[in-house]
Length: 110
Length: 118
Image (cartoon, rainbow over all chains, first blue to last red):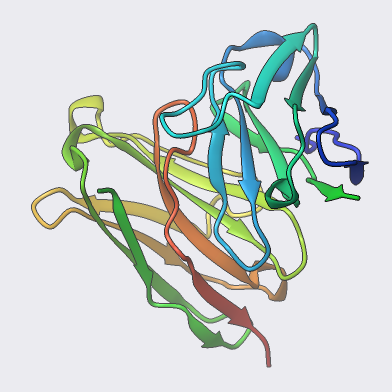
């Protein structure tokens, strides 16, 4: 099964909003609520920032929000800060008890 | 505080074997499903496999690239999860992370590096 599709890069200026997409199929993103997003700072382990499409773990700023429409999930980062510069990955449950990740999006704060 | 400490990585020749360990603490390990996720150097994340809790039958599922070569197991008395990797290939070179899995990969350790090279 193929990885989910994310844009390789995204950028925005401090204070702006940026949205990262994650496109799958009806067999993964479109078919289940188990879509999550991870932030990976340079040289660090990934960190969960969104689960079940739009829920935020304790401690994650509300500047991070998630949504889904059809087979595409989205992560929006509002009020961009320099510390948000990182790689972002989406993930989804898929048919046959499989779990998929997107290829990752490098977010640059200009 | 959740802690995950992976170990057992290293350099191994193609065709060789390696057993990774993950020591978990700070959450109810025995009722938690556990997954391994890997990341090749400079690349993205890839799910490797998941083992359910004992009460859910310790059922395992694996990603297609590792099925038949990798085996997951767990020891709830020690809060440990293991990944036995056989018939290793150069494309298995990656940092391997263990993570509690509840529909998302909730917490991550620092990982252990596996290098498969002759």
